[in-house]
Amino acid sequence: MKQYPLIAITSNARVSAKAYELSFKAPGLAKSADPGQFIHIRLSPGSSYPLLRRPFSINDIQGGRISVLYEVKGSGTELLSKMSTKDTLDIIGPLGKGFDIDPSRRHHLLVAGGMGIAPLGFLGRRLKSLKLKHQLLYGCRSSSEQIKPDIKMCSMSSDDGSCGKKGLVTSLLSDKLDGCQDPVVYACGPWPMLKAVARICQNKNIPCQVSLESFMACGVGACQGCVVRGSDGGYISVCDQGPVFDSRRIDWDQESVI
Amino acid sequence: MKSVKKIDLRVNIAGLELKNPVIAASGTFGYGTEYSGMAEPRDFGAVITKTITLAPRAGNQPPRICETASGMLNSIGLANVGFETFKDDKLPRLIGKDTVIIANIAGNTIEEYVELAGKLNKITDIPALELNISCPNVKQGGIAFGIDPASAAALTKAVRKVYKKTLIVKLSPNVSDIAAIAKAAEKAGADVLSLINTLYGMAVDSKKQRPVLGNITGGLSGPAIKPVALYNLYKTYHSVKIPLIGLGGIMNYTDAIEFMITGASAVQIGTANFVDPAAVKDIIIGMAGYCRDNNLNSVTKLTGILKC
Image 1 (cartoon, rainbow over the protein chains, first blue to last red):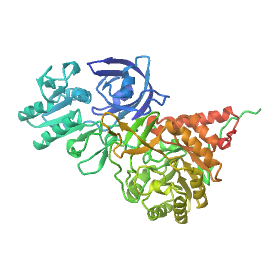
Image 2: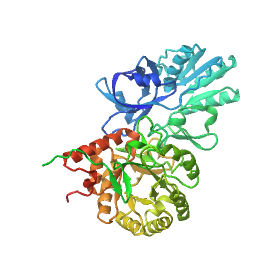
Image 3: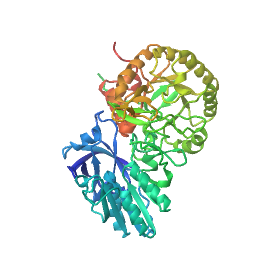
Image 4: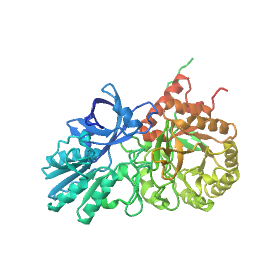
């Protein structure tokens, strides 16, 4: 990991009713990042508002250009949504442990809920370059919030039925798994969705990796601020032991921290 | 007037020799190696470890952190690996990194502090100890010893008996008279005082109608608490004779200078490590520049020059 204190924004635009895509050039960072890893952005260097960095999963890397997806959720993302190519960011990365790709698996299934598409976009492109069979199952609230992924889509769902099948992405997963041989599941999305995906996979004894979100301060495992409870009862830090975990390591009965 | 060429950054705090006056505050620099590639132990005059307790501690229920206006709340709850794992696994990675290692400790009882201090007294690579009597996030121990002069004195005295190297006592701002606690710790044998630890604080989520932190309350740090820290430092500097280490919201070199001239012999940076791992280097360069501009050949000349 490295600190890049003066990164110029190359674009920052709305890509759906709620989501934005931020891009910037950082060749050093781009070269060392793996799918599932994240970057930690200081939005106003030199100012104490907002004070803490904000973590974002890497969505795409093309050459030396990196992009992340975000939704306006609080004061930090609100400020970010108003930034332009005139602004610079202070970025730390790449951070955390990403997806563990096992090439011996025959079907790589990517399950995304809403903004959870972000790290799976990068993973999909990596799987493609490795020539591994992969498919995306994508669920969102409605067609206006759909983010067009450029990975092979298997099926889609939405809460209101305005795009894909009406319902939850987890029901698409159950259907899909029934016809799949030797699959592995990678999931990112809201806590209840991840919990359901983890349960489905555990019942069918299918390996499942989940990418978790948490509030973070340091992002490097120093402060222990971003922990979640593990299935062994102990706390595990999302920033350095994750954000991608084997779903069996997580205690799914806890409340989501976000 | 002859201009100063080389600035001496070294400070000597009650016999503890540091190559520069900027110290990593406990709990913000992990066990020293987490920021590798961005900030290294050697950048600091000293690194204070995360608080160590005799047995490992899991820490508090999440969420543990929350941003507030120009600050942050934390309720980590002294999560740490415990003394044995620290000694066998974490400490070896910090030794030989060209910095002074200071261990920060806490306990539930005086006996636990004494036992830990005794063990640390035997570790030659650690020349100083910082007593955490000011953590606001644990129910037992910690701040319980730091809010009353008599208990602060009793604890300091007991540790002093077994600990022969530099003894630093870290004070809480959550008291009505910090000078009384400072004097009590000084009289009981503290070599140095560091101040301030975090302030009690709380954040509420109006949508959920619930506290934001899993522990309900937490400790406030960051730029928001700097005026409180300077006030407590000012008050303490005029009450005791032993050297002081100032901390509380230091983000840049001018903040560090403010603490030095108010009476600190060295400073600690905490929340700034989370926000800007490069802060330590910038602060040291800036402090040297300030000394040069003010014709001071040593950072030690800054201590207490406040005009008032």
